[in-house]
Amino acid sequence: MLDEVRALLILQDRDRRLLALAKDLEKLPQDEARAKTKLAADETAVKKAHDALVDCELRLKRLELDVGTRRTTIQRLKVQQFETRKNEEYQALVHEVTRYEKEADDLETRELELMEEMDTLRAAQKAAQEALAQTQRLVEEDLATIAQRHKRMEVERAEVSAERDQLAAQVPEAILPLYHRLMKTKVGMAVAPLDEGKCGGCHMKLIASTVVAVQTGKEITRCEDCGRILYVQE
Ligand SMILES: [Zn+2]
Image (cartoon, rainbow, N blue to C red; front, side, top):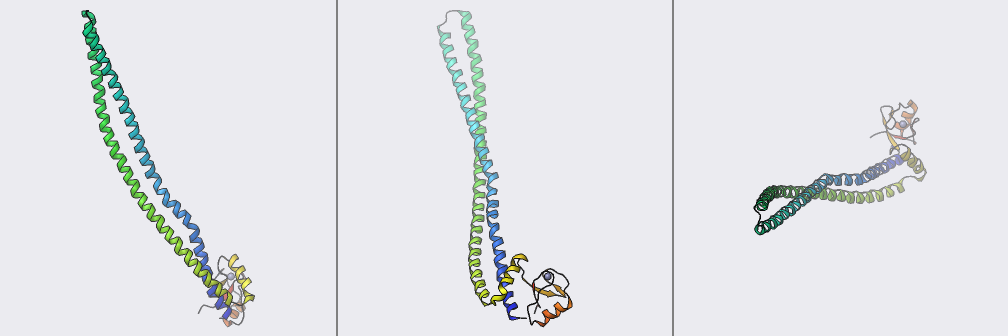
């Protein structure tokens, strides 16, 4: 193999690593976003549980007010009852008091039911909050892992990049523009192996003289189809 082709192969190996790293780095924001979406369902559940509790609290307050109103009315009716001299009016007031007392009792029964409902809703809210906290911990772990991966990849990219610059300096200058052009246009493979008479890059069958030229290794030989620089695998 020609020395310059060997040098290009090593350079290509680092360049391919850099391309892979760039691709992985590009994916990290998506990984982060995906991790965060895991929170959405739990956050909704917590909000729902909170809203249900607030709603129940309101209903309970309204009931308490209603009971209070009934009790005040009963007090007022009892005073009237005490003050009246007419039997007919007295009987009517007794009847009214009984009616209001029945209403107040019913409302109080409903109040007790709502208090029980409040207990259930409080427990549900607590469970939803705990589930969210658990998910938050997991998401934070995921994000920390992603951040670590990011850091590692940046370090590796800096190292490989420095190394590739050194390697590029060792490749004969005349061949570098061709290499760079091929790297860009041939999806990260400028130098391709000879593969049973075919180009390892585009997989087209090579003409016999090209195969012989690659095997002889005296000059830079390129695939007549895709233009990649060819080499014989050792
Ligand atoms: Zn080819």
